[in-house]
Image (cartoon, rainbow, N blue to C red):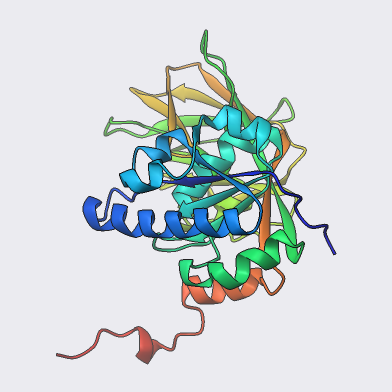
Amino acid sequence: MPSALPPCPVAIAVRPSQRDGVRDTTRDLSDTAIGLIVQLQRLGYGPILEENSAAELDEVVRFSAPARSMDEIGATCGLIIVLGGDGTFISVARQVAAHGVPIIGVNQGRLGFLTDLSPASLPESLPRLLAGEYREERRILLSVTSSTVGSPGYLAVNDVVVNRGGATSLVDLEISLNDRFAYGFRADGVIVATPTGSTAYALSAGGPIMAPFVNAFTIVPIAPHALTNRPIVVADDSVIRITVARAREALASIDGHHVIPLNEGDSVVLKRADATVRLWHPLDYDYYHTLREKLGWTETPEGLAPMKR
């Protein structure tokens, strides 16, 4: 069994959903956050608010715990608790992966593939997790670099998408694996996804679901002109280069957060990052149960049919 987390600073990060009412969402998050702060203090830990998160919460919460930057949290905290949906979790994971700080997700979003606790379960679940009753899972990431001058490197938890941007015409893309040309195609774009991202945009584009412990990436064309261009799965030690062969406009998007403008001849290079994301799950966590629940695999056709009014 993993060891208990010794007394240390524990960070709390939140993000209200842009799709929900701001006032109601802020109220719910603030209620959960203040309860979490009190619980952590009773258990002997020092709660810390991520500085951008603090600005989203009520004043009473902001005065209950100090606020720190994500860099400071990565360097000093022994754990991060994320309140929100998968998007919030991914944003936090991307920023702290290099520090190796474990993350617990509390779902206050919609789908919740990565945030598997509920606010109602925290009083019972959190003490057990902190006492060492958890299952740690490590998720691989993509390291992203671009041929454009001055472009920084990025990490992607979910995926990297190269697409046609705002142009109405398709883009011609070339894929190279380990410095050898693999194939080219014309499409709206292409998605390179980690196992974590295989249930996100890549799934919607027809890609396969990959279990998180599979050491691989999937390459998924988006609406390809030729129907023979199908998704493929490559080993995670592959170096993937995507080159824009022809396009009026092209963009590379990293986790839907960072965007790199690309011109004809530009490329992005993707490979497995050295860092990983550390997730702490309850001992009864089951990835396949999550798939069944979130994707509705146990529903019958009758159950999926709209209700008659």
